[in-house]
Length: 147
Image 1 (cartoon, rainbow, N blue to C red):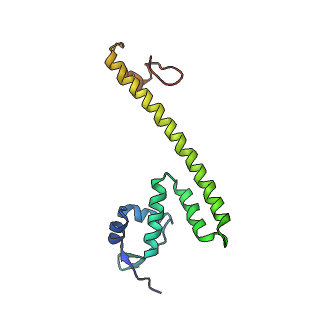
Image 2: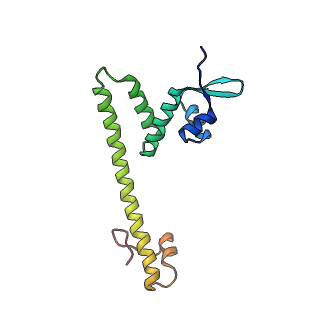
Image 3: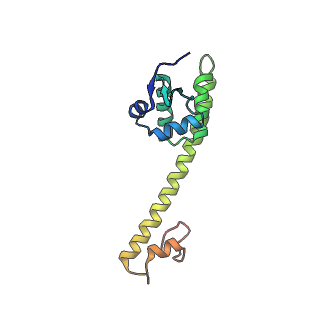
């Protein structure tokens, strides 16, 4: 059975997703292997919907394996979707915790960089506090802040 569809270039434009990324998602099984006609791949509207789902999930920080699990849930939910929803919630909560941890790391990085740049302006350090911070020779307090 031949699937009617459109070429990878059209899918890329429609989804604003790089062609190489689409090929990668196909290679790792996140989107089904496209039908080939000669050397061209042809995708369906369902493929485009799936790609938009993946792209949105990636933009929210979900890892590839989490997206794979979420995609399985879109197909295998119970009649009322309660089980699938509970599983999706568990995946989302794990992702949220990872996002919060990354935010904490970013805040810590911001503080260290702000302090290092401020030490340059205060001219209280012999040499360069930024380079010393990166090399680990400029000591910080227990919160990562420079003196």
